[in-house]
Amino acid sequence: MWLTAVLRPWPGTSSSRASAQLHPGQRNHSNCRNMNVSVSACVPPPSLPRLLIVYPWTQRFFASFGNLSSPTAILGNPMVRAHGKKVLTSFGEAVKNLDNIKKSFAQLSKLHCEKLHVDPENFRLLGDILIIVLASHFGKDFTPACQSAWQKMVRVVAHALAHEYH
Image (cartoon, rainbow, N blue to C red; front, side, top):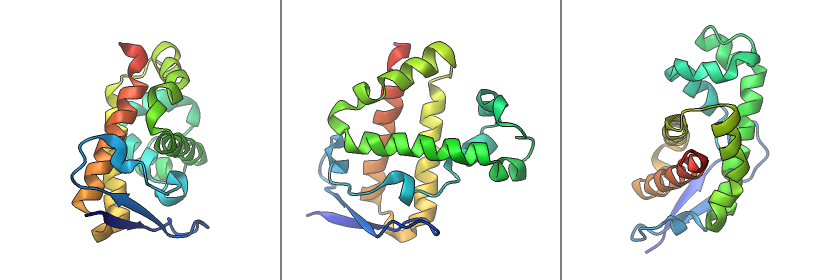
């Protein structure tokens, strides 16, 4: 039996409704394969700001973004919002390239490892934040099967981003 989770675009975006077909019995990452969704259009923008607020030590990677002194400053920071959209766009590319995620993220992995020196645990934290934001945004439409698929997806992305660290 296939389950359909209706994904609504974030208010103010122009995306139409999209559906994600998820098979609860599948144990691999292919249950995201049929997701016809533009992640950057459907996911609320507060994912990165929330990461910076909940895990304040992650702010050190964004020192050039200006004022990050309070939750209000972070939420209102246009550079944080722009980078958050960029992150979600990358995530959307991962959804489109499930068979080649490590290759898709090879350059980003190298950048985060060699130049930015980001602790790979932060990739997992961002994935956890993304799941929380999705659940909050989609409410009852974010079923356990849908959550399971997204949990697997964020783990695969986090692993791909941490690839250069191994």
